[in-house]
Image 1 (cartoon, one colour):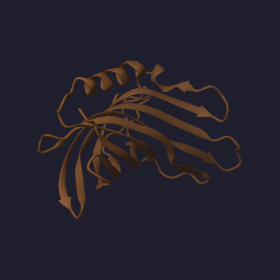
Image 2 (image 1 turned 180 degrees about the vertical axis):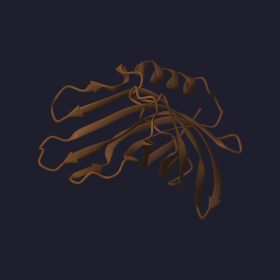
Image 3 (image 1 turned 180 degrees about the horizontal axis):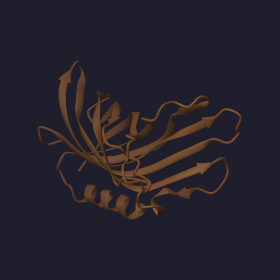
Length: 196
């Protein structure tokens, strides 16, 4: 599935011609804002992941399609093994740029469709969280804000912050989901204007 999406994205770029497409790739440092009360001895850290995609920039807004990795790393006092939550999303974004200084400030909506979700404790095999239909919500959405700085006519550096607005965790089979656990994170990437 992942390979097919990457091939589809690349083939879209190949046939784009002079359509104003750019490719981007970089690093996302993500975490999860848990709504539940903090438990003593439990800490959550950022999980690094890949962020790649393509962006169309010939409209008043920037429209992008890509893939991103999100999650968190949980540590519990007294346990050596850390628990890692890892999720992959197919992202669609619509961002509004505004010129500030040499670059652009951007803000807009990012919608993510969950492709995979796993939980790994230490060196153990990953557990597929999507096996239980109620463990993961299939859709995530949030606000993406940041700044684009041009390096030259074809390359830019982007830095942004993603603030999740949707509860990514399901209700676990309960009648009512009282939690609202949201993704958040910072993103750094390099964009390149495709030369065709």
